[in-house]
Length: 521
Image 1 (tube, rainbow, N blue to C red):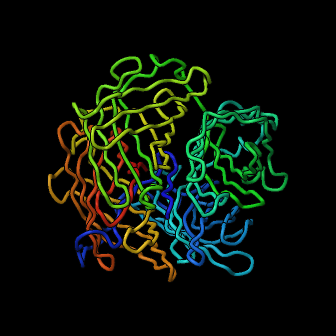
Image 2: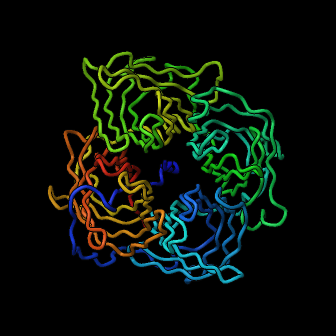
Image 3: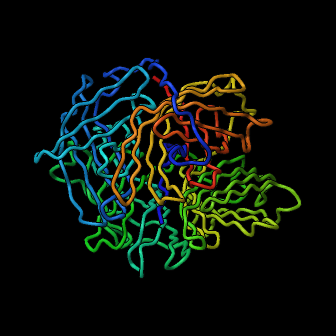
């Protein structure tokens, strides 16, 4: 059972391998257009990637930092790797990179023993981008962000940080998905004074809110000043971390007993975080990915709701793909008990809950933690579901094709239901204003199954995004991939704002979802 993983605001899923229907056998990759150059990738960047080890089928993750010189050289690449099928370790690599005008490029790295790591990158801007491993050794994808090296100090990390750590647990009789979201409060002097968290896993179900005992947060004496690396301990677990800046930290769990594998980001709370139910207002879209313990398959969902009064939800639209079964729910007489609340027992934590009941679909329940008045992480705690993801305030409607027309970068990772293969792709597409065939682009990626990995470079794509009504609820997207993937994917789209779209695959052959982000250069 594959665990769908996303980082906040940075991932986008398009199911293109072995999907329903036939695809285009010959789709030309559009010529690279844009203003990106080698110099667009210059500085020190923190990265995180997760996926699967094809030799064991085990959870795999890597996080770290690399230095790009703006002229095509990666002078150093320091990473922490967790492979629950083998071991935990650190590696140092170096190599080359290139960047096309579109922001698409490659990174080729070699360690001191000659082992290679090949990745494709897609820049969202000079400060952030997406990565997918394309050497076939692992199925992994993720993101990178430019680091502020002046913040490579323990004193820079102070305040309340909201985190989302999805992963897997080996503490029961079998490997099961696990979700951990909550807050930690480092004090800037090496101590984590505490925090609040919720867990959800197949062995124990949802537990929370719980509190952390004091923990530690220390910079690495060898790599801290160069890469922002350090080690933290809280909640009975040990983590390596890399500081992006004082507001953003990447974590990877490195427990010696290897009973849990997880990784994710922590973001500093800012603005006026709601402390009462009445203070939480507006329209929101959310995206979650994970697993169903009932169907023993992958599950993903996307939704939108509007707060109509203190504790009351007035409008809901919801789409789910549970192991290939797609469901759509919208507000009407079929929906009852649509409520939310801000946790006043843990005042200031940004923790809240939301629930609604559909007459045919049952009861849907969530926990969320806000890192700003309108942004947070969300955990699905509905019966038989273990999933988490991103919650964002919706703004800028009505949404139109002309308002969304731009170039976008995307990242996708997920599972094909029929084969069980993990599929990791990243790519670029340009959205035009026409009502048909308004998407053209390119993708790169890897499909990994029990027989090993297959790389799919430079695949042309085309398709159509159709905006319904004012664009705030479920719009439709069809993407066709060229040879050798030759497949068609159908999805629903929830527009968050002019720069961001949540996307959920509705085909019966795959469970995939994510976020598309507008490029800037």
